[in-house]
Image 1: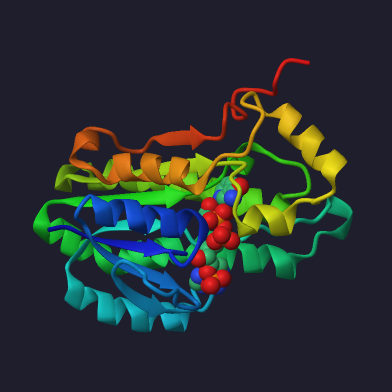
Image 2: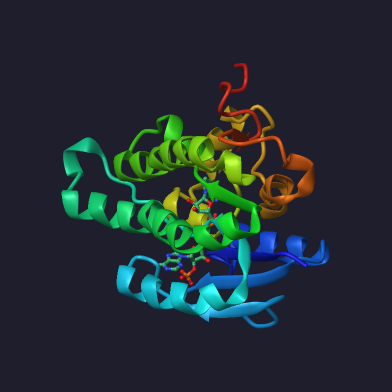
Length: 236
Ligand SMILES: NC(=O)c1ccc[n+]([C@@H]2O[C@H](COP(=O)([O-])OP(=O)(O)OC[C@H]3O[C@@H](n4cnc5c(N)ncnc54)[C@H](OP(=O)(O)O)[C@@H]3O)[C@@H](O)[C@H]2O)c1
């Protein structure tokens, strides 16, 4: 049975992915700053924006034969260019980009040894550009470069690395970072070709595909789960 590490696993997309992959008989290891009740696997509490905590986590994970990683933890940092400060930018990189690379680097040797590995990064449609999201979109776009580079270097070990780019999905992150004003919400949804929010489970199924054996010849790719918004807005 394969073991999957999922970061940001206590709610939203990470929890939906943990439940789905457990149903598909994977061993699940979840990570976030706080544990959730009835989690379908082992759980480690870790602040992923702290690289010392990640090093300690990697030491524990090395004993658990992890061959699949879902780098999902993240948070959005909204600021206009006029209000942009580099402290916030650094914070975004430290959470949305650096832990994905640090964790993958810490665990990739086991995948090489096993001649099997799956890494799935959860980026965002915002990586293509979104107003008021300099820090967030830069970090998420960094995940694209990370995946495409590692795809080339690791294919010979039968390790794939792909990206799922969601948006907009109804989770705590979405609610926290967008106005809940009814008129704004209506206009926001009217822009989406599907004219609705996505569900965490709809992102989980794309992540699960990249983890699965069915995706064995796919690497370095990005799959958008965004109701079509990466293609364009709904017709007026
Ligand atoms: N929802 C959307 O519309 C949307 C769109 C595009 C991309 N995404 C991406 O999808 C991923 C999942 O987001 P979501 O929508 O499911 O959001 P969410 O419900 O807010 O979940 C975020 C997860 O990340 C964890 N996390 C945040 N800061 C952390 C830290 N310092 N250390 C460890 N864990 C941390 C959270 O746990 P704790 O806070 O308890 O630590 C939580 O488990 C994120 O990378 C997000 O950028 C979401």
